[in-house]
Length: 286
Image: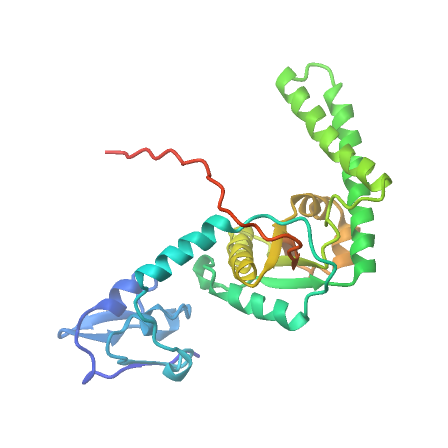
């Protein structure tokens, strides 16, 4: 059970805890001081403890000794962060070097800071660094996608099908068949011989996949800063969604689904320059 207390002598009545807790309304103002209205409503996001300017809140889930203070970001840090965001790239070429499991576990811990719907923090991970296992997953993935390609070609020949949709079916089928040809040549066009495959899994239901993507991208940025490359693998996610045997092979827990699949390893090449990106269109509604 969540226990929350406010030291009324410390509280300045700024109302910050009330404002940041406006969804669950754990706090309210009384006589120009913040008081706890209902601790049972708390979903343990920690916003109140993080925002209080005088450390007046004692929260059973967030003791202050485990919540280090955060300072202002300098102009140099802001520029550096912007640069990191710009020069992270999807990596498909890796050194023939394993990644220490402790490094992967530390990256996963970093990903905990990603936002999640209702602060549920339900993203968990499956990590695979056994190369024989990864090869088996790749072979089965290509087989599943090959079946999808053949189904698409059959659908494309169906009577009365819209020409645009027919073209889309055929283009998608060709892209999946390309994976088969690459595999026949001894190439890995699914996992790119990466030393690690990471799968973020979430409960079935609303917002789970979004939570996995947020966590995955946080992990990608942290990995990039350590000289590790990552790439999201959509083909594997598609195959997993279509094949129950493949889900069992990777150990997807009952009642959960894979929200994101990625590969990870030490980059073989260092990217030396930032590349311009398209400037998004912004429309302001008045």
